[in-house]
Image (cartoon, rainbow, N blue to C red; front, side):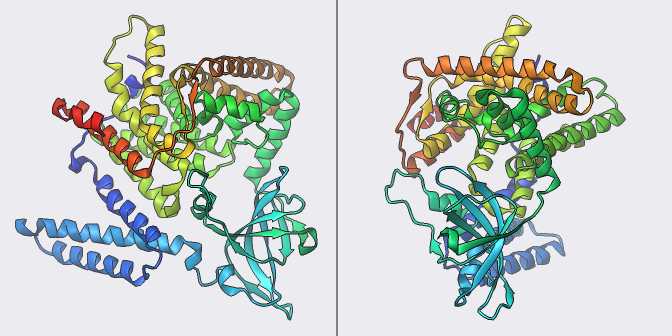
Length: 520
């Protein structure tokens, strides 16, 4: 057996094997509750936390009678629902007493540093506000992120002073439009401002963080070495997570063929690094010391790749998820893969509860769950006769499983469905580890043996040009993409319910539920 079948994780579905999932579900409900009910006083979540903690404490101080076992569960649920609600409300900038919009002193001059700047034809940037000077020149602290549209582009790292009138980010006017307000809400950005040149002044430019400086140097070096915009833009996107210079025609080709996920460094790339490292270090895992050493090497490789890409939030989230999976496998073969996935999500949401509503977070976890649940079942439908067809069949089943689990969200967010995603998956999924490996080689050759730099440059150019050409041919096939698919939220929930029933039916061979799956 090969591919993912060799890394077949335990799949116990008993609640006893998934304690972190039992904690995660009420925690997710609490986060959603805290964000959805805007007028909910902070006292209510604190009451829930206190009552839940007190009830659990009283019931654990002595042996719980069998008839009270459900009471203990209810108190635990109450605690974690309250904790999720309280944490989400604390994280929301609108609830901070020193949020800049709450202050609004007359004739104030605000100052802050620039993050996430774009120098397109319609420049914009995000300013992390640090404080303001009042009319007498005295500085006061303030917090919050402001979306600005300056008359001339700003640069990341600049510290600016400005005067502006803050406005709420507008709601979408057409129900079918992209909801920009919701998108910015979960980035904790709630207000915007238009800045004319006379309204702001650049005070200084702070040096970038060493990881950001390292990535910027790599981007500049790769741009000079690879030269072709269609090549170096794909290479920097897939390896370094830099997508600012992707040509529009390249974006369109990858999106309409269902391959745009490879352009965003996230769960797929970290998953490929995980599979590559675990595959290379599989030998000798019969001894405990060697297993521990191999696990540490895999963790170092995963987080080394995260540092190479600039440790963006999406990469950090994916690295955390696969680190928990790796450690869960090391701790024991009886630990459920679902418990490891739930533990990583729980930790990430403790850090930032708004990640629950990020598209990248949702797609990464759904894709991994789809692969874990559906891929082994589909793989068993046909036994490949040789090693080559085994590899191809494994890639097809992986692509189908990930696409099936994520299709409700892709329809909801992007309103299109790439018909030939399975065909593009046969191209981009096998090519991605080679592109990532050649990108790492390119960086190492620059440092260690610059005289041989032409070798990885040539191979990287040849490989990316071939992938781009094949995807362009797929894009030109008839009915390559179905556009303008708009489904209400109720339909999306029914699709997920149908997927859940399908997984349940397949797992327990309870074919009576199959009509309900298709009905959903």
